Length: 200
Ligand SMILES: NC(=O)c1ccc[n+]([C@@H]2O[C@H](COP(=O)([O-])OP(=O)(O)OC[C@H]3O[C@@H](n4cnc5c(N)ncnc54)[C@H](OP(=O)(O)O)[C@@H]3O)[C@@H](O)[C@H]2O)c1
Image (cartoon, rainbow, N blue to C red; front, top):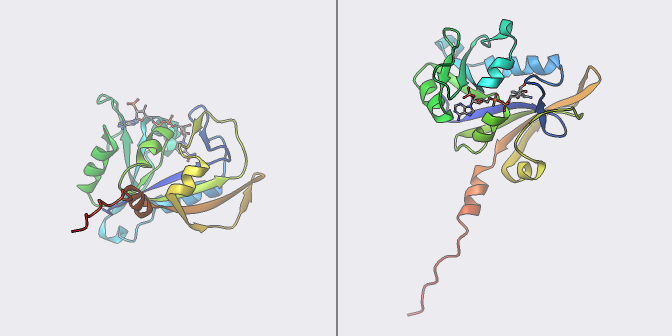
């Protein structure tokens, strides 16, 4: 398994990601992008698969005919040890336990796919790597939000790539990839004034 996990999210201009435990928009190009990104592994021939980690509510938001997500290990985070899941779907009581469990199997990449509660924990995790953001250029009436504002974004993330702007169902959107700017954060942490050495 790779050292870092990545985050995948689609966000509107108000940082909205969901409403009534479902996606507020329908962009099939984004669903295809999500499927391809999270399913593809160069190590498939060696029997490795990618894994997706999601919160219990996000699991429940996936229509029953589409879950578990195909060709990926599905891991659901819940604090309820009695929570029932179909055979083969993994369960963990914390993000760290989830990563430990996945590290024991033939896993390649790990993607944290939401929702807001899980993003909140993943974004400050030391193993957070890339952030795949689908920027939906509109504002929806949402009740669930991505937990980083634009200023925090600029401070902690570096833009690696941005697709052209595409359109579907009258909606403009694009795919961006950010990298967590951890080194800069560490420099910030280590700027304590050095102790003065007295002249001898
Ligand atoms: N736009 C997007 O890209 C995107 C992606 C994903 C989801 N969504 C949307 O986001 C919404 C759901 O997000 P949400 O924030 O309400 O819920 P969520 O993050 O999907 O799930 C929350 C649940 O996860 C479990 N959980 C949270 N932290 C945990 C931890 N540290 N250890 C173990 N379990 C933990 C708890 O389950 P228990 O209560 O069972 O303990 C908690 O109630 C939906 O509207 C969905 O459509 C949008």
